[in-house]
Image (cartoon, rainbow, N blue to C red):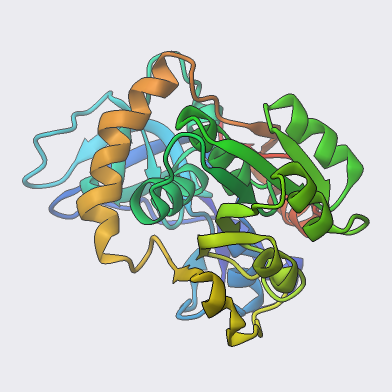
Length: 322
């Protein structure tokens, strides 16, 4: 099979599309013939060696959609020929093996390319909002980097909950596109005074739930935009990892929550279960819509990495695998 392998950390040239051994599913796993694979910012850090715990060598990719072509011992809930999607390391390849605990049925009416845009971004957003923050109707939610795959998913999840939703982006083009997806307010954090805009739009109250993914570059603005007893959910650091803040946030009783779906003990027990039961039917009914910016052939992985570094895309970049 063809797949992208990385044997040393570095720039784009450390990724090689090669013929790789066909994987065999272990007990509790299935093998999927991959039809589409989603791109994520974390993959650029894996490639460069700036991702904690990433061993060498590795096959690139973190999520996919495709058709099961083999099942391992003990697998009864999935079968050969079934269309599925899920988080799967090594997904930038024609075949990948994945534990059934990370697998989901592809919703009716969702293409493979759309399905590949769901597992990482949507599960991260679902965990942040539905498992950790738990906003209720009428609360004010602010989503940093709303044009990202996680941000565009969080926008729809918060809207479905009946929240007032605002988002930030780094360009006016992304701000305009975010408004088309139903934001109540959108801000260019590079050119606007975020705190002043938020306070004006919330009648001086501030934000109840803030999703922090940029990190150092915007942390102070987000802290200063929060309402009394607000919650900040931290899950990224694209703008710098060292965040400093004044302990006077205690006066406003602000809660800080850090999270990772890769390590959270609640992810498998709560997030995966509620996502299967509640979110998947909303994709099938059209309430939730995967946001796909563009579809590239598998051979264009290096271009996909360049596009992520350029930060011009809105939603997910997806690789089609023939």
